[in-house]
Amino acid sequence: MYFFLLNLALLDLGCISTTLPKAMANALWDTRAISYQGCAAQVFLFVLLMSSEYSLLTVMAYDRYVAICKPLHYGSLVGSRACAQMAAAAWGSGFLNAVLLTATTFSLPLCHGNAVDQFFCEIPHILRLSCSDSYLREVGAVLFSIFLAFGYFVFIVLSYVEIFRAVLRMPSEQGQHKAFSTCLPHLAVVSLFFSTGIFSYLKPPSMSSPSLDLVVAVLYSVLPPVVNPLIYSMRNQELKDAVRKMFPYIVLKHP
Image (cartoon, rainbow, N blue to C red; front, side, top):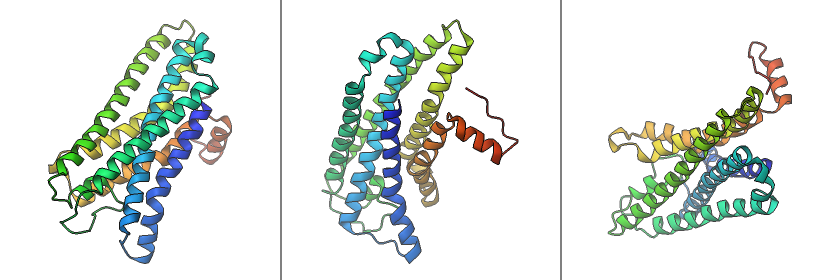
């Protein structure tokens, strides 16, 4: 689990570093300019990191499923070699998805200006600048990514259905509490990540506005990477003790 958390932390750090530093620099220098190559690099890195995080969260759901539903086989099913292979597969799938989306997006001619109405280069806003006949090809690539993310989501839901069934069959209340405390941080991260991403890309066009698009973009590109470390670190007893000293009226139960 901690090996996957290390990968998740690296992905979160990368997501923040891809968008916020450039946005902060532009705000500081009162400009909104970014080079064409810089925009392409930003799209590639953002899609790579976000897609890899989707894949990694799915792998982590499988890890929790094996740990709770098949504990006697955990060492053989999720050994160090298997963990490395699954993490490599998560990064590899993100890389392939990033290559596909970046290549198709920036192969389109931009004939509606060169101003992206967002604080970073986001694919839906770049598509609005194109009037090419190959626009449907790019939409197909985006839909492929959405269906891929939906497949991850279905796998995670099915994993947690089996996990909750196994936990509810446990005779010990202490065992149930321990299992739930292991799964709930991951479930909270998944819920935050998928809900913000799905709302961003599947909201109806009638709801689109510059201010709403900005808020939604912050929700799915900035909020999850910032909140993820806090969610997982709340299982750390030393952090809980520090929070109690800062906020004496907050009650945090021991695991």
